[in-house]
Image (cartoon, rainbow, N blue to C red):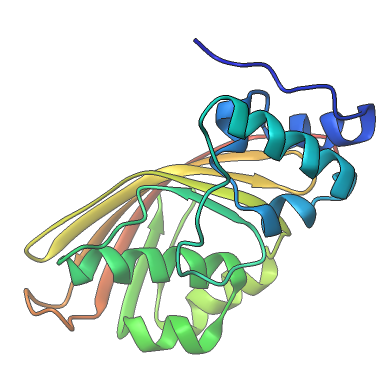
Amino acid sequence: MTIDLPKIGKPATNALHHIGVKTLEDIAGYDRTTLLAIHGVGPKAMDILEDNLKKHNMNFKEDIGFDVPFHLTGDLKCDNAPKRRVMLDFLIGSALVDKDKLQAIVAEDFKWEVVDAFQLTGFDAFYQELEDHKETIVSIDVKMNISHGKSGALHGTQILENGTTIYFADMFEFTSHRKDAKVKSITSYIIMNEGES
């Protein structure tokens, strides 16, 4: 059973609906800071949301240890799997177009293929592609993040500020089985659902 959002005012409700938040359970997936940063969601709406969460034995989400300017949810635990952390760092580095973070985790001869779109070889070509298509991201939800040996995969959704939803699945190949192995190649499958422009 899902619980509808309480009455928090039309601007706050519309702002939350715009990023796919429609239930109190959805609210529990966000931390206070992220919600307050959303245009249209003010302190009064936050107090109402917090009271309603408490009534239903729920809370705002705890800080997950990633300092990002967008909402990040899903399969974020890395436990004892360093490659899972590398894949999350890659996802975040790509979303932020963070050159230093990305250079630290990809091999010099890195290859990236987006199926039915393009293939790139080398860090500079990869980074330029990210720069050329930089967008403001509202949220990323990682549905699954798995690794084994020299391979790994993660998939999920990104919601852009303009309302576009991007569904992604990234297949990773690492340079070796070692914990500190760099990303050798990624094959990406991407579906875009255009929002308002």
